[in-house]
Amino acid sequence: MEQKIKILWADDEIDMLKPQLFFLEKKGYEVITVTNGHDAIDVLNEDNEVDVVFLDESMPGLTGLETLERIKAGDNATIPVVMITKNEAENIMEEAIGAQIDDYLIKPVNPNQILLSLKKIVDNKRLVSEKTASDYQQQFRNIVLEIHEGPDFNQWVDIYKKIINWELRLDSSNNPEMNEILTMQKQEANKEFSKYIIKNYKGWMQSGDGPLRSDQLMKEKVFPHLDDKRPTIFLLLDNLRYDQWKIIEPIITELYRIEEEDYFFSILPTSTQYSRNSIFSGLLPAEIQRIHPEWWLNDNQEGGKNMKEKELLQEQIKRLVRKEIKSDYHKVTNVSKAKSLNDNVLNFVNNDITAIVYNFIDMLSHARTEMEVLKELVGDEKAYRSLTRSWFINSPLWSSMRKLASRDVQLVVTTDHGTIRVKQPSKVIADRDTTTNLRYKVGKNIKYNRKDVLEVRDPSEVGLPRPNVSSTFIFAKEDLYFLYPNNYNYYNNLYRDTFQHGGISLEEMICPVIRLSPK
Image 1 (cartoon, rainbow, N blue to C red):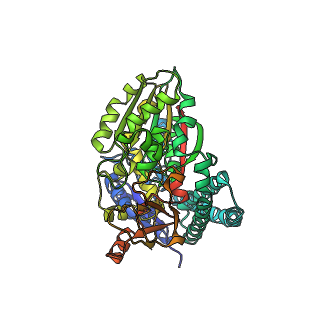
Image 2 (image 1 turned 60 degrees about the vertical axis):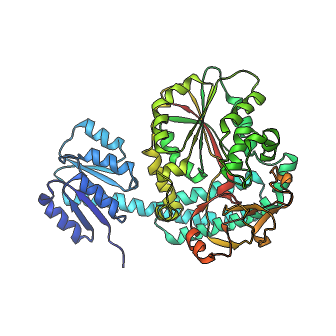
Image 3 (image 1 turned 90 degrees about the vertical axis):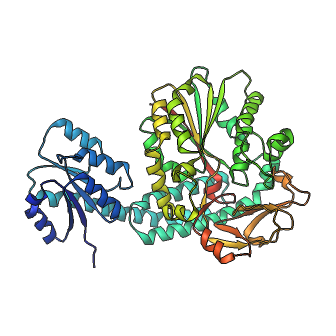
């Protein structure tokens, strides 16, 4: 049986619309009615199956335009909205159209007008969904061939971008069968990508060939574009994946023009301690430990592992930039620091380069949240992207970026690594000094399933320090996560379907770097 189209109709004179409501119900539509904007927002927050909203413009309290603005700023931004008003004033029409309404009707509306509007909106949505699914079916085989034709690192980036593009298009198509096929295709891509990394990673690190890496990012993508006349803001969003960038890109490009969009590969482990220290130092972790031993702590040592990013950046600038420049560094780890950044962001235009580290996941969850709560908020990739967009558009960070857009600045947006939703446990046996990370381990006498990992018995081969003479690194591939035998079932249930990093996957390793300027 075909599911009824569900309409939410908000009008303070809803009792006067009984003929129209009766007409719609006779035509097979389901109609929920409310008399004000606040109730409309509540219904949308509680019911994720509303297909279209009819919104009276001149409601008391929260007006139609104000209600529309809240809808478009929240998780329901993609729901079609029809604005209905008694007022034909041009400015109201322009405001509504500018706020992305899907149709506009003038009272009194007759049933045929309503029906025509619904057909146009709902059938268009259905046709777009069907076209998206059809297009993906045609592209599916091409992507399969590309995955298995021995792609190089540039081709792997192209494959990953294609898969993400289809994920984003299918997000709004409500086609669970296609989504399941795409999920399986991404798993297959990660399986082959992991083989590719295992085969090539050591060679890249020893020869210097291969893709742009974390330790080369500033040298290649930031320093060559420093400008005496224009300050540079280097914004590093912790854990930002390529798909999350694509979700916030349309928001940012309202005010900024993309000058260059590129990528780099995060070094292994794809974790803050290693990848971010490498970005700010321009060195591999083993080189940081050798040159600045007082600034490097191994996994098994007590203390914060990213406490010297400012100093590492200053040393890299001295080493690679041949002139005196004024630099600054700020790390945002909580809401209070985010608000402080927003208050003071225009002061950064007095520097040649200002680096800002934004602890994105902490900001997303507003605090250090228990794993179970975060699992509920971001149960899958679509929810992760949706929460990213909602957080960003309402965040002090976007407010800061809007302020900077009024000045002649250069903005570089990037990350240190991404995350992957883990699904398959892999059993590891190790002593108590071994690291607790779920996607990589470093320690002595580690026992593990060799088919699940990239093993590095000599860390110096890949630019990593060696905490002990017999230390070995192992990196989980695909969507695996490491578990110890103790309380195995408990931790398996706790961590399955959570977003983790440190290992080998397209999502963790292929990182966006975007250079922008205000429009």
